[in-house]
Every structure is written in C-alpha cells, then in structure tokens.
Length: 219
Image: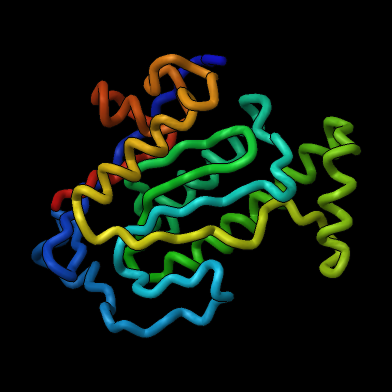
C-alpha cells in the first residue's frame, strides 16, 4: 500500500546536552527551560512518565487492535492532530509511524507537559475517528468502542496507555527510530521504509519533508 506523499513544513532542531533540551534558535532566550526535577507525574503505573523534559518513545493502540487506519482520510485525522499539536501545543515530534491499529512516536514537549498533550490529542482524535466510523457505517467496529466507553457516554477509541520509554542517549534514540521506521516493512506493507508515507522515514533517509513536522535531535 503506497499512496501519494504529502509535504509539510519542518520545525526547529532540538539539542540535548546533559539534562537540558533546548531548541537551537532559542539558545539566547528562556523560552525552553524545562523543570528537570525527578517528580513523578501521577499517572497509572502502566504509563508513568518520570521526567517530562526528556524525549520519550510512545506507543498508542486502538482498542482491541481494531484496524481503523484503513484509508488516507483516517490516517489524516491522526497526522493532522499531530501537526496541530506540533504547531500549537509545543509537541516536538522527533520521529513517528502510523500503522493500521497503532502509532509509535518519539516526542518531547517544550513545557515538560508531554502527558497532557498526548492525553488531549487522543481525546480529540477519538471523537473524530468515532464520528468518521459512524459516517462510514462501520457498526461492527463502533459497537465494542461504545461498550468500552459506556461509562463516559462516548466511544472509547484508544487504549488508555501510551507506554512511554524515556530516551537519554543517542544509541537508544537511533534504536527506537529504526524500530518505528521498520514497522511497515515488518508488517509486509512495503519493502522500503521510505515507501510508507505515514512515517518520518523519508525525512531521515532521503532528506524530504514529512507529512507530520519533524524536529531533529542533536546529541
């Protein structure tokens, strides 16, 4: 499966030096100086973020692994939301891939509020995805989502967890970046990671623009 590739403007570069992450063009300002205290964000144990200032490898899965990302318009819901969060919510996306029923990303947030942004993005895309499924008459997919979200009166599209893994070194970053880019190849969708337009592979391997704005990391 290989659809037309879309372009979008790129973002600033992020530098990681010791315990401080700062955009290159903000080195003479105080716009990005995250609090690096070891305070634990009070979230359920299975998706606890211990230091919001660092980049994290995250994984979010559609409930029951339902393959909702089956057409470009469904992929676009998530891609557009990631782009919005990059432009308006301080989300720095260092790499990503969107698959049929989940997505991986390496990301950080300028105000050390990664958990909040991811939570809000998932809530927003849940509404759009469930509305799109209803519009398309996908009752078999909607039924379990509505059952799972009965307590809140809506459809629960995403699994609650996003399984963050803190990234503190260049080798670990490169390992996770390769892993996410290789997802479509392992799934048998494409032979070359760059042929999957819903990832940052072309940005890194061909120096082309990405569907979602990418912020490179300098170590």
